[in-house]
Amino acid sequence: MSRFWSPFVRDLVPYVPGEQPKIANLVKLNTNEHPFGPSPRAIEAMKAAVGDDLRLYPDPNADLLKAAIADYFKLAEQGGDKSWVFVGNGSDEVLAHAFHGLFQHEQPLLFPDITYSFYHVYAGLYGIRHETVPLNERFEIDPADYARPNGGIIFPNPNAPTGCLLALDAIERMLQGSPDSVVLVDEAYIDFGGETAISLVSRYPNLLVTQTLSKSRALAGLRVGLAIGQPHLIEALARIKDSFNSYPLGRVAQAGARAAFEDRSHFDSMCEMVIMQRDSLSVKLERMGFEVLPSGANFVFARHPAHRGADLAAALRERAVLVRHFKQARIDDFLRITIGTPEQHRALLTALEEILG
Image (cartoon, rainbow, N blue to C red; front, side, top):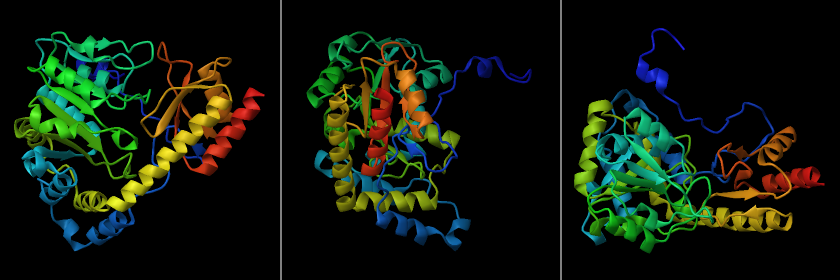
């Protein structure tokens, strides 16, 4: 802590990302990265974008990328177009703009007690009063718990780190129960088994849906996120972007992201592979005595009745297998295990057999 820091900085509690070790030959299952790689078309598009044009600023509105996203999600069928789309540097930047521009201060922002910990960080960063809503005994979001005055609602679907999905009819109940505040559905993992709420956007002016290319499109290193909502919500995000960083996405990122949305066959096949590996891993962990929560994400959330989560994570690390452990109450015995390749799963399961005896 420095004497030059402002009181505002001293009071911040930053988000702690998953470890990115610089050690070779680790089985890295701790940060929910895609195990199988991005679209070859996206890689070729990014290579083609590397040239003399990099001396020029990129399109500040990313119009071609927004058009590709609007086409992918068939927004025209809802009466929409690229004006319903916002893009930024990863979904975290998009979420930051939403916190700053769309959540009110007169009533508390609501989000689950067990969820993406960046929500706490952004609420503190932007001075937004907030309340956490406990998940039920099955670690699920109950829409009835959100039917109270609020300045906004935000939650991941599937939730993180639990992986539990919320059905569209439940999301509609939340939207109908809070017509005067924004409901933000954070769909970082939706492509691994859920149904996107984007189909509801035309019917609910208070709905904003965010997604990322970091998970299902295997482009975590590119940093591209998006939001879809009615134009009055998108305009709020754009006003903040243009007051903060009017050129958020570079030429290479725009080219790669656009190609990733256009390569539907690669995307579909890679998602199917992750789902297959997730379901297989869940069964094998259960056979070893683990309780595994139902997951709609590219990870599983599991605990063993005879072992503390911290002890299991430490023992796996000793065997060069990284998983994510959270010290938070109610989930401190769980491990969040990213879905990997079959080879990575074999290494994980072999290490667990040794640990469990």
